[in-house]
Image (cartoon, rainbow, N blue to C red; front, side, top):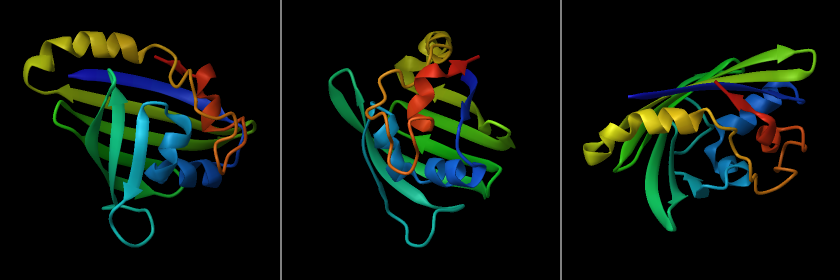
Length: 156
C-alpha cells in the first residue's frame, strides 16, 4: 500500500476552502487528470454523498466512484475513490491560520492485481508537487490563491 501526505496553504477562509474541496464536481477545475465529475446522490454534500467521475491516464479515461465517508464541516473530510486498478482512501484536514487555510491530506493507495508491485513508485511520485498544470489560474469559487495554486504545494 502506498501512502502519500502533503499540505498546502490557501489564502481563503476555511469554510470556503472546505466547501470547494468537498464538492468533487469542482475537481476538474484544478486537477488536470480529472476529465469530469458529477454528483449522483441527492441533497447537500455530506457523509454518504457519491460522485461518478472519469480520470485521464496515459491517453485514456477511466471511470471512478468517489464516496464521502466523513464530513465534519469545516475541519475534516474523508472519501474513498474506487476504480478497477486501485482504491484511494483520502483524508483532508482543514485549519484556519492567519494566511487563510492550511489543508493537509493523507492518502492511502491500494493498487489492485498486477499493479501491486508498483506501490513504491506511487509513493515516490506522490512526493512530487501536485497539480503543476492546474487547468485555470482562477478555479471557480476560489481565487488564484486557492486550490489552483497547488503548483506550490509540497507533498511529503
